[in-house]
Amino acid sequence: MHSTLRLYQIADNYLLALDALADRDDLPAEVINDTMEGLQGAFEDKALNVARYIRNLEAEASAINEAKKRMEARARVTGNQAKRLKSYLRDELKRTGIKIKAPDLALRIQNNPPSVVIDRVDQIPDTFKETETITRVLKAEVGRALKAGEVVAGAHLERTTRLVIT
Image 1 (tube, rainbow, N blue to C red):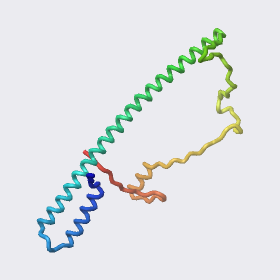
Image 2: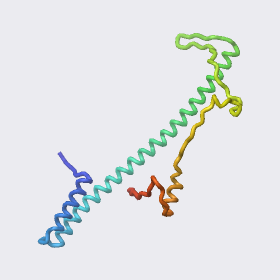
Image 3: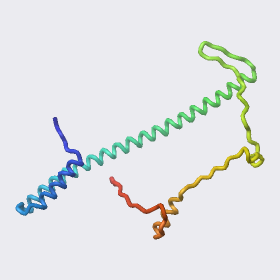
């Protein structure tokens, strides 16, 4: 069985060797440099391969998203076509009064339950209204204030890192 070290294992080995070699006074600098360069090279190779794999996954995710957009557009077009045809068929059945039965389908016009239509919202009595209050934090404004040196209770600036693959 061929076992390859994972990136974190190579990183651990590099850091352990760095600590171990730093404590040794009896080794020539050339031996220390060669050892560290070998470990660093293995780490770099593995890191590059992980970055290439990340790029492949990102490309695949992008392709999936593009396919999803195309499928959603097709679904929208197909759904709209079905809606138009259903309306057309309903109108023609209603106009003729014909009911159709087949082994796999039955077509007829049926009344829906009554639905509420609001003509003018301002004329509806308050007893039939509900008021909602929505609170949104304006993060951009909070950020500007914090960057300007203001103290904003309940918020702080935090710097994170990201991997850049170019």
